[in-house]
Image (tube, rainbow, N blue to C red; front, side):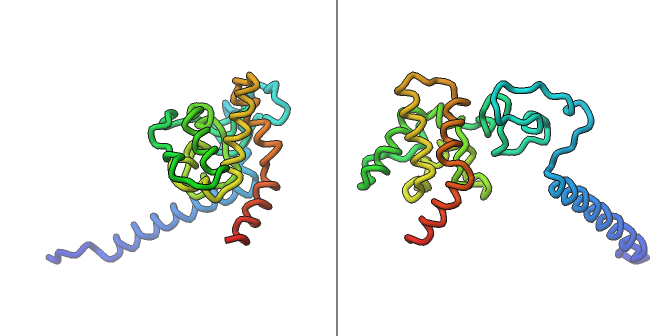
Length: 189
């Protein structure tokens, strides 16, 4: 009796595994090409938001980081919302960098709720604008710094709703402006 499994059985299991993987990939590709908007099941009837750009899809289980949610935010805040992991602003020499890191120390819970249009979440690096200040991402990124500066100004003006702050960030640093800024920054390196 051999210690090796039956080759026919191995081929059968390999074929089943490959078939399941191909099916999963096909379903994933199909949902992505359809915009990830499946409107069936219990999430199909979503309450409409009072925010003008919030979409029902954003509130469903199909929601992805960056899509506007009914509360006006583009992320689901998670992780630490304190400044304990934010880099110290003192070692930085450029005024705008030092100021942005100082802001991150002052209003970490607000920045933890804000989506940063720099795109770092697409690389799995950060979850919120606060994350951009836990390393040196914001040193060379005007989008990260600009998001924090908008939040700081609005809080100074008495705005406390993170959804309203996110709307102002979206207006200033939305996807088109962020892409232009990122290309400019890459060119200047």
